[in-house]
Each structure stands twice: as structure tokens, then as C-alpha cells.
Amino acid sequence: MNKRPLFHFTPIKNWMNDPNGLCYYKGKYHLFYQHNPENLYWGNMTWGHATSDDLFNWEHLPYAISPDIPEDIDGCFSGSGFVKDDELYLAYTGVIMTTKKINEYGNTVTVGENDLISTQLFAKSKDGFTFEKLSEPKIVAPERYCTAHFRDPKIWGKNGKYYMVLGGKKDNKGRVLFYQSEDFKNWKFVNEIYEENMGFMWECPDFFELDGKSILVFSPQGIGKEGQEHLAGYYMGDFDYETGKLTHKEFQVLDNGFELYAPQTFKDKKGRRIMIAWLVNHHPFPEENWTGMMTLPRELKIIDDKLYMYPVEEFNKYRRNLEIYKKVDTEFQIEMTDKVYDIEFKLNCDKDFEIVIGDKEKKGLKLTYSSQDKRIIFDRNGAVNNFESLEIFGTKRVVNYTLSDDTDFRIIRDKNVVEIYINNGEKVFTSLVNFTEEQNFLTIVGESNVIKVYSLKN
Image (cartoon, rainbow, N blue to C red; front, side, top):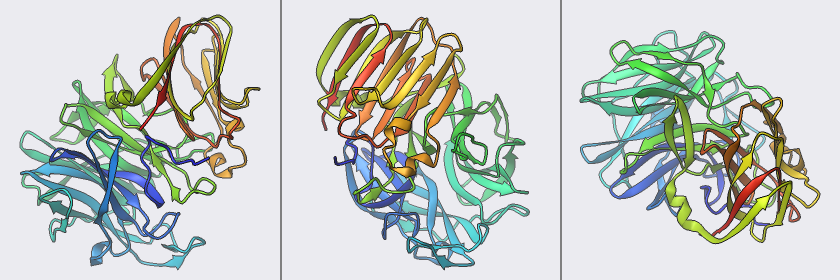
């Protein structure tokens, strides 16, 4: 089975990680991303580039930024896009390796994890396709901050001023650094956002305001359990732009499944806040010539002081061949003719239930709910099928969660990736899998009145 998804963005070939520079500019959605031009594993970081009219049909373009100046000669790491005066600016992290070795995959890496010098750099474009690197500004780490781990600038504007957050590290603890500028050239370090016991590095910060709330999205390293040490989540609260202080509630993960990391958001022409994240996979699927994929683009909303996410509405135009199944009292099973589909249904959550994408004997990816314990178990043990890379981040997640009597579910399968949305995106469970040809059954054990099944065509 060809494992390349139809709707989750993938590179034409070779390694891909973080989404970068997400924006809407001159009538196109722009997706930049970390890419290795040489092979299937991390290294030689270069900014790939693609554009789309609808966030799903992407045109691959030449590289936007490549390592070719002294400050970025060993890699152009992650960053963001910002439209100013009808020009598209890219802010990114250039790195110099102070020690070097060749790893097992043939890529140049540092000998020690701190053997890097990081500088925040800028490039701009008048057309969104060709980029000129700027000689200024060049931003280096403040005193006492680790110069190796100072990266991933995210820029935005408000009330005539410009602001930036950066991922950083000091005293072996992760932080977000907050900067402001009057003219987009001279940047002042204002404050850091930091909490104890939140990991040794905070990567890929993103800051935005939504429905009157301030949201800081970031990826703290070293706090996760169940196999995945590096997570992606957010703080929600109130931000003081003068002092750079964020008063916030407790940390919340963005996705309760596996792999999701390094998310980035942007505001599009419709005013929506859209997020795309990387689904980490350290090795290519068997017999594939690409590594890494993105999530579906998700629209973010705040409901009852919670951050909800749901596939953008453009996805629905790819639905085909609706089939409706009514009144399921105990167990529903159907053999799917396609490996790409979209399913919606409600379940009575007063009782236990189980959802399985797998074979006829229900070996596969499972989501089960205990109505007594108010707990969801998300288990992909039966969908690994000897692809050991999927075991790196663990194969089971346990989430305490109380569901209402009739709860909405949406399951999107795109070959070897599954996204499950519960209660219109209050909780999301995403997983890479390695399904066999026989694992093409959908089984629902529980009570449901109507199950809608769509095939998907691109």
C-alpha cells in the first residue's frame, strides 16, 4: 500500500519537520517547512515552500531559504512569516556548529548538544516566491541564556508595534523570551515567560489573542510521559504587553494522541486562527521516499475557556458518497472500501464504548471509554505491525475525561494517519499507524442513532 496521505501535507521526498512561516499572502496560503535536501533523516536544515488556494492542494516551490551566509551556514532553523507594507518577511534561526561529526545517516551534526551558535535572522520578498536575506537585524541571545538553544522566532503586530517570542534555555530550564520593536529593526528584550518543572527547553513558541484571551503555544522538552518526552501545549490567560508578563491557567496539551509537535498558527483572510503541526516520525514508512507529515489544518476556537480545534471547513468539499447507517444498539462493523474516509456519529456515553479501526477481529487502533472511571484509553499496539519507529513515543495514552450522554465524534483516516475529534474538537486524538491491508474495518461497540460515512477524494 502506498502510504503517502492525500490530505496531510508531505514533502515530495526526504525529511521534513516543523511547519514554518504560515501565512496568507497575495491570494495564497503559504506553508514553509524544515527540510533536508539530501536524505530521509534530520539534517542540512533548509526552508521548503509550498502554496495553496484551499490548504489541501499544495504546489511545491523552490526553497525559500538555504544555508549560504556565515550566520546560517550550518542550518536555517524554524521561524515565522509576517506581512508588512505588502512584503512578506521571514524571521528564522541561523546556526553555526562549533563542533561537527557525521552521524549514522550521513548528516552533519554537533558533537555536543550545546555546540551551536544561534542568531535570529530575517529575509523578505515582494512576491512571496523569491527571498532576499537582510543584513539587519541580527538578534543574539541575551546574557546568561544558552546561545545554542535560542530559536524559533514568532512575530506579530499590535497597535503599531511589533512583538516576538523566542524559545530559549537558561540554567538548563526552558523559557520563552518576549521582545518588542517600534520599527521592526531594533528589538528590545522585555521579559521571559517561565514556570518551574516545565522541561529543559521550550521550542517553537507561538503567541496570539483569541476571543479576548491570550494564548501561548509552545513545545516544552522533557516533561512528557508514556514515551513521548517532548509535548506541545498551551497556556491561556492575560498578557501585559508593557511588562511581558503572562498570567495564565495550567498547561494543557493540544492533542491527546501521539506525535503532534511544533505547532504554528496564523490568521487567514477570513479572520480564522488556523493551526498546522508536525507529526513526528523519526524514520520513513517502509518503502517510502519521504519522512514526516503535517496535521490537517485546524481552526482554533475558545469555548467555555477551553481551546477547541477542528478541521477547517474547506476539508468538507472533498467528501463523496455519503452512506448513512441508523440505530446501532450494541455493535456496528463495516468493511471500508477506501483507506481515506471521514465518519461522523454520536455515542451514548452513559455506557462503555469502543471504537476500532482494524481487522475483522478488532486488532488495530482502539479508543475505549469507561463510563465508570470517566477515562479514555487510546491504544495503537495493534496498528504498529513491526514498524518500530511508532513505538518510540509509546503506544498507549490514558486520559481522564467525562463525556456527556450524547457526544459527537468525528474520525478522519488518511491512509496511515488517523485524527479523532470528540465533542467538536474539545479533545483530539491523533496517531500515526502502520495498517495492514486487512485492517480496513471500522467497528463501533456502543449505542448510536446515526453513523455518517463519507469517502474522500482529492
